[in-house]
Length: 95
Image (cartoon, rainbow, N blue to C red):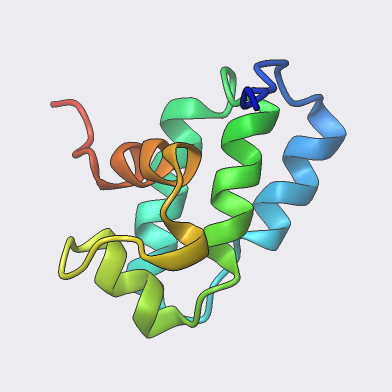
């Protein structure tokens, strides 16, 4: 069974909802997420949105552990889409 990737760009309304959904209670997580949106909001696909939505299901401490590479995605989170978004979230801002 082939995996279908949705590489269509998010429309502005969907992007706004995703940004709202990504608000966190832990400042450190918000810093990673805000940088991600600053770098990728104009090219964010529906597939990437699904990956970040999956990450937002985590508790703040668990998300921070992934963002700081203290651990890697496991179980249902261990997908190519989540790993792609996680790599983008972890990437330092360009100088």
